[in-house]
Image (cartoon, rainbow, N blue to C red; front, side):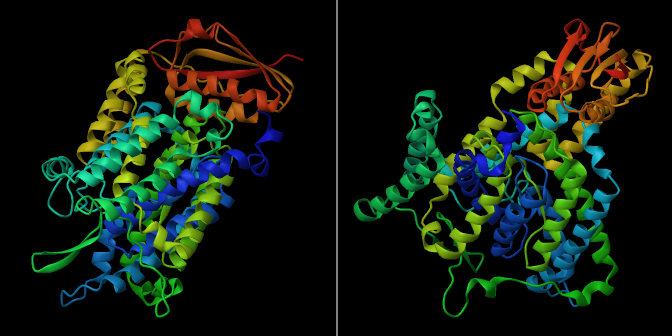
Length: 553
């Protein structure tokens, strides 16, 4: 596929079905993360719409999808509680949320500044073992968190991604409760939904000209609604409904179905929009919270950007500084109209890729679908069983954490496998940020260990813009050279002939080999001829180093 075929308007046959899938995946996540953040539920929907339309339009990421992120939920919840608590100890959630929106606005401005300062290069210094561990860890966590909903146990707070939950339970105790208290109706819907999703993944279904155009999750949602309606007519004991229950002398909603407050004559949707309270600008804590969110949101976005680029079949490279600018603009808009902070989110992005999305139009359309359907058809959305959505997310989780990924990482050696596993374990056992941080620490240990064993010679790039170019790799090419290698490859002009010579190279880190292989895949769209010399012989378990450019004219 060449550049002319990557126009957003020339790939609508791929992007429209994909955007529907992303919309279906994003809806429960937007609601769940808002719930986990202690914010109004509609703030999650606003963030999803802004992440799709605003960020999608500005971003240079072809397949990344932005929205409210689970990784920020703890920061958001703590900030709202702190800002909403008075000196007398009373807590006003709406006052805290309005104050928090000002911090979100500050975070957005800081992200734009980071983009202008070209801070996006930090993404290239994260090892692929940690990024792939993040993908797998999110996938496994997604599976574990959705198992209770698959059994019809919907009492756990949706959107809580930490192992220890605010209700005193944890990931595994919730699974135990769900197995002990199953809902037959929910299990039937889950099993039917999973069977349909697996069926739609089969090649003979994909090759059918008519069926191949229908996204499986859309069929699953339709069948899930119809099954539950049929239960209501013929098997009332199986029907799934939203219930009210008394817990600790408090009335609590126990939802088995999606629950979005519908518009009516007294409270239309614009009445649910919350505006920031700028009177809190005198509070120094607002600036500290804004700074913290800017750093965490930017880091989470950059990690997801690199992970999404690795999943891209065309191996396109997202301009990270532009992405920071887009996220900053999105957070400014979201905060001004009462939305949660946004980042690029790997669950939505991977769902986009797995569903056949080709350009950023799928992200923009998913935001439009969120806006249109939530505003105009809340009654239809409120009929979707959570067990049906759980089946969709179980499949997404498996694709992120499939067995083949574990086998591949194990074959790459202990230097790759151990950081990968550490990242997964701590994402599941604590939360996303702890998993990434500890995985990075272990990965750095292996990098320093390998660098201690092997001397490095750094040769700077020497590009003069000629069409016939040789990239001479030095004796040792390490992970630390990822950014410079990637930058050099990006600066190669279209219509070039490139020779990548590894004849004098002893060690090449697998991250750099992956960059070179991705460049070869993407080169055809830029009419670049690529030739490798002795690259296979240079592939070692040890890391990689530098290069110089030799003009052959």
